[in-house]
Length: 154
Image (cartoon, rainbow, N blue to C red; front, side, top):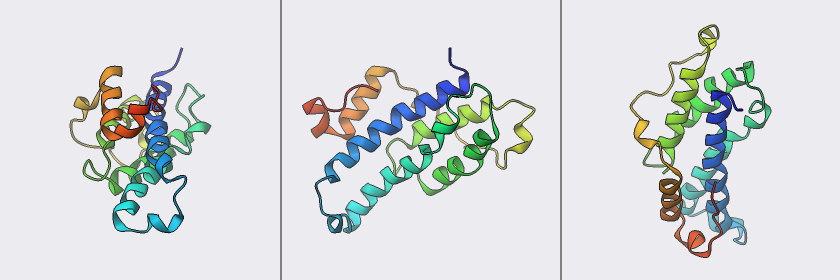
């Protein structure tokens, strides 16, 4: 059975990995210089930001309890991610903001003094989606992949 921390990390990964894969799959056979136009750079940047957020989760997702790495994740990558992005620049921003809020709430009181900021503000609870709503969002974000059935379910 997963701890609340692990369940939140699992949710973050289940949103992140398909977003990164589906979004960047169109750029695999594209020469690098075609990514230079402003519109394409913004597109690639949003996927980079998500990858940057989740790249260090593999070291802590298997630990049930909060560790120093979890606190570092909340203090550095999570904070940077939320400050550098917005709902206008990243379609899944509300999903990640909610999960980061949930992580802050799950930090034990004995460790909260190690947090360097209060966490994301605002009510992101509306970003909780069931599996069908999640699939609809993926289809809306990536219509060409979902029509071919390559998105799968996360």
